[in-house]
Image 1 (cartoon, rainbow, N blue to C red):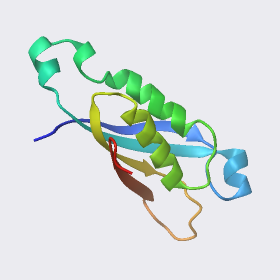
Image 2: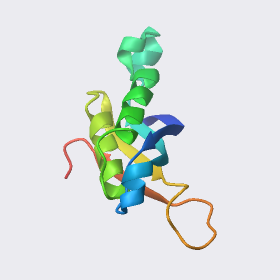
Image 3: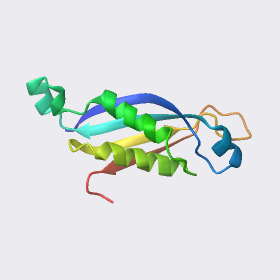
Length: 122
C-alpha cells in the first residue's frame, strides 16, 4: 500500500495555449497533485525532513504554471510531474491541470488533463 500526499487547487496565471491571445493575455491555470510515497519514516520521526514539504512543492508547481509557455496542457502536466519526481522520496505522481477559461465556444465548467508518471518509467 502506498501512502499519498494530495494538493488540490494550486493556482497561478500562465500564458499557455495555442492561440496568440492566450499567450498575450494569460489566464488562470489550476493544478491538482497526488504524490505516492512511503510516509513511514516521517510518521516514526515526526520530522518534515522525512517527507515532502508540501509548501515548497506547491511553490514549485505554481512556478511551472506561471513559467515558460507551452501549447498543450499535456506538456504542462508532464513538466509538473518532472518537478515532483525530482523529490527523491516520491515513487509516482498524478497531476491534473485545469484550464477553466479555455477558449471553448460552448458553455462548460472546466477542461482538464491528467497524467500519471512513475519514477524510472517512461
